[in-house]
Length: 261
Ligand code: ARG
Image 1 (cartoon, rainbow, N blue to C red):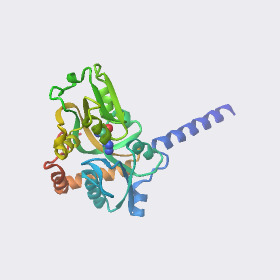
Image 2: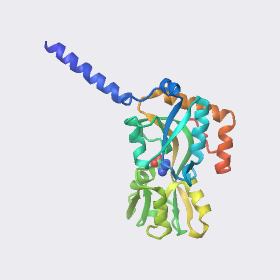
Image 3: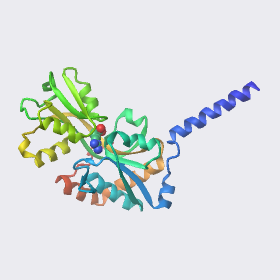
Image 4: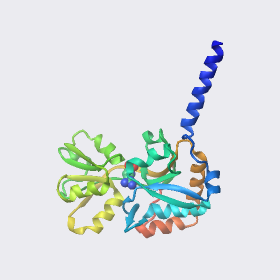
């Protein structure tokens, strides 16, 4: 009796583990293809990557995802949610994919499966004070970052920072700097560039990179069929010139990762 019971318990544990690994009941690509539509979640507050122009979701990542979906033979049903809800929703199977400028980190990779990166960038230091440019200049300073981001994780590592103020949206972290409530803001290099160009009157200055990162889409942990299709589609748009066209439209340059993953 006993060995059977422990064997059953073992099987139960294995099944539970499999469920976790496969992301509860994440839709495999076959199901998505049959349905004809993939559900993709983003934030919509991170220009020029994903943001709203009036009621219209737009940005580099919206264009990239649409081009990939076309290669995959499906249409996208977009969802826009707060940044901190995005990866969690994959685990609950509320959507099939997330594209919202997530840097690939070991910590996140425990909970989700990342696709190949669709661009390479990094966190930069922005300030009104030209003397605040590099990590060491943040000593004794107050720094704003968006909650749940790699900017927060990397500023946290700096021993000398006086205070870190977190905001649910990156646009509020920027506003905190614009209104003088913080000494510096850490955000993506291209987000900073766009914000500085759009608001020359604010007197914001771009400093150095604090760190670099590879940015990718994510699917439910272990949903390899969807990740595989996304990787194929990304490779296809990078090979046929459509990725380069989209990238130049938004940035005037090609921002794909140069080094192999
Ligand atoms: N790249 C940063 C990270 O990985 C920030 C991403 C913020 N994205 C957004 N849609 N607000 O955490």
